[in-house]
Amino acid sequence: MRFRKEVIILVAILLGGTIFVQSKIKFEFSEQNNSSDTEISPYFINISPSKISNSTIEINGNGEMDAFFLTDGTNGSIINPYIIENSTIDADGSEICIKIMNTDRFLIIKNNTLHNTSKTPDSAGIYLQNCSNINIMENNFYNNTHGIFLKDSKLSKTSLTMA
Image 1 (cartoon, one colour):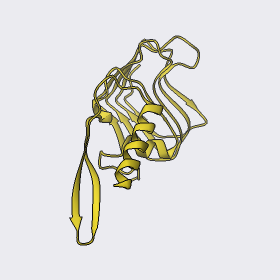
Image 2 (cartoon, one colour):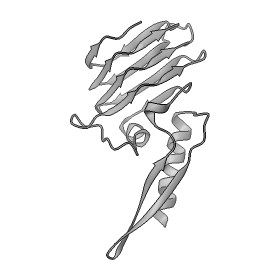
Image 3 (spheres, rainbow, N blue to C red):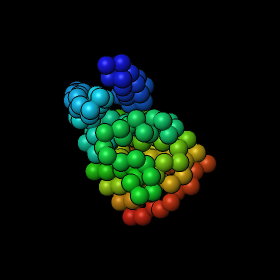
């Protein structure tokens, strides 16, 4: 029971501290008995990186990255990278649509539409700071100062990104 409360509190803190989503977040848990141990595992969370719309994403560090993708079945490795895809993110005047900082997890950002950032010098559809192992491909950017803004970062691959 203690594990369940810690998971709910941790996920709530990380989600509340890193992104603001204007939709309901639903947690449901199932208990599975394995001989003498009881394992509690989340099986549904009504937020998916591929379904985010009109909400900006900000992730700082490997821990926040792992928490953000907690229930999608990936682990951020080269074999099983995290993926943000098929999303439309309207920054609505905010500085950045997707901001990723201080991570070396493997991440693919593809087939997204990222638009309407503010007109400040550092505003961008995708902002990466101190990152590596990120592939950006087939994204559409409009009404942004920059499509992709890199600061102390190395991309693994960039292709067919439209601005």
